[in-house]
Length: 183
Image 1 (spheres, rainbow, N blue to C red):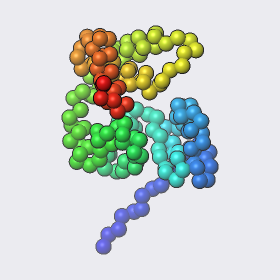
Image 2: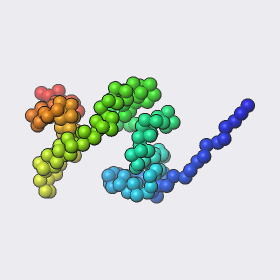
Image 3: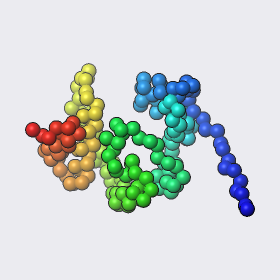
Image 4: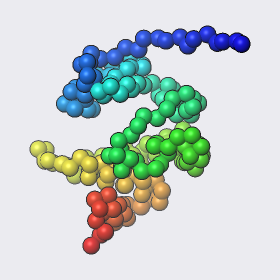
């Protein structure tokens, strides 16, 4: 019987963490700042939320390889009910044959050339939304990001459609997300 050589384990850098909580306190204080600081720790960084180990990849080519070339090597993390509520049963939350089938469906829309063509639309939509904000104004970030995402989706899917279609689509989707039937 032939046995293979054991896999090589390379230590992965990461931020300091508490014994049981991991990086949860730092993440909870400032999630965006936490991920920004992770980028300064290296290209591949280990971090933990409690006992759950995770890797943060900061280089696009590593992320691309993970998402396209080696999906069988890593298992998806167990997503909590809140993530599943937001993500549904889409390509991000799927694994194995279901993931491959869903990925094949979206592949034409996310080829590098297509994504580059969306950049101007994304920039325009973000700028338009930001121009509606006032200094010192309190915002519902979830609502604003949902509106931005909807605006981008409407423009990329339906071409030059402007705010009327985006707003009516947004109201319908927001009602569904909030559990409202639109009444």
